[in-house]
Length: 392
Length: 107
Image (cartoon, rainbow over all chains, first blue to last red):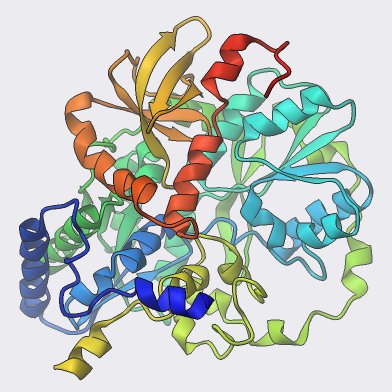
């Protein structure tokens, strides 16, 4: 039943724009033709570019955009899912706290992310107090409504961390604390750019994260790595326009930052939000699940907010979680390589078989922003170009 | 979760730094303290987890709204992007409830 539903969502490969009723198909075809021309003009093929945002992958997969991309253009999703890169020891901290009786609140996707042996959802099933919230403010409301300690297990990139920061400077109740698993995107782009296996020639940066950071945050990256960065929005046309700009810059041989989403992003970004972010958080090195140690990639609370820092307030002993053997399938999970852009879900033996949204093995199948979950939802193989060639 | 959702500002409480914002007929209270620019009724804001992170001038809102129009009106319940947008709307407290005050038990 579920399978049939998914199949119906796959777009006709003959006209990927037929379902884009709300947009101007002529503009879409124009952008596609420009993209074709730019890829043909390049002095080599194929060209691989990476985006770092689950919402970009959702838009690409949902609207079947890969069917419109030139054959020699690979658009790969990188580590753009904050829930997916939350490392096992971070999940273990939250699970251990929940199991020792502390009430833990988090965004829904975080509940099923596997730790060493259990997820928060497993702990909840065993009776632990775990609440799903849509915002950090709702977690603060819980703290106001209850006499007990409330730990907010905070995930998300800088965009989401700003909200956590705003709540912490607003005098939250004493029984509220934050277990931060917030991540900062710019440093991980450096890691991916330096991976020896990578063939990435440019990055599409996420429009709404850049709303906060501004486009200037990528300028040093471009200098250091000689790879262009183009900021793009989430409309199908925004994504196509962002790719056109990125290809233009790649072909020009002069790497730079370009803003293809000016209606939301400026060079300097949202300065009050940045001030708030860095007043509350400090960047620190840490592991991103499946990827690497990322210097400055984790956001942790500064000392002046220590009283709201779960790690300072509680002694967290997760050792009891380590005595279980990890499930067998975990060894075959390719989440790390997929998030680094080295592999794709369709290259994973488990994808859609041993690993499904109902029975996820890796975090990429858990989160709505995970590459595997997105590909599974929108038909399993959203790159329809092979079908198009087959039909021709 | 990085998608956010745009909404139209109906009312601004400058002192509390809170705006009443309309999201496709649903009125919510959105916090303004991290917004980059002052907002007025008629402006659009981009809401992420209950906070306005960007003012969108009305003349630029149409392009931003098309995607969300489709997601909220046409996409099915299981769609990941639709679920994301609905969660962003859910993240902000209900405007009616807040106006009635904390003593209201009906919610």
